[in-house]
Length: 89
Image (cartoon, rainbow, N blue to C red):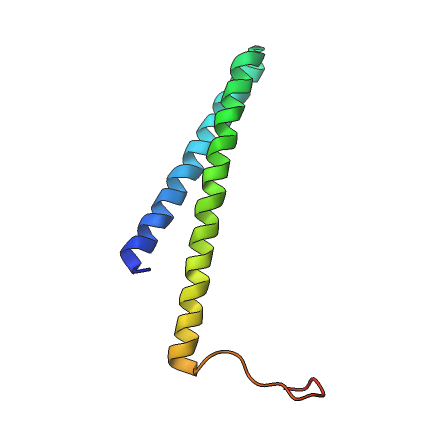
């Protein structure tokens, strides 16, 4: 994944995080007002945003891990070293 795409992924994650926090605040306000039906709907929206945030976070982490692996391969010939049968490397 190129840097522009990775940056867009990070920006999308930040936006989802902000949106999730927004819905959580609205749900808390509805709860404080005693509007249980509205609070429930807003908590559902919050859960949806949390799910999106989780997926974007996972994708972001996987992409970064893969990039580190590629760099290890290019610059270090891979990060893994052979181990002897005795367990000492």
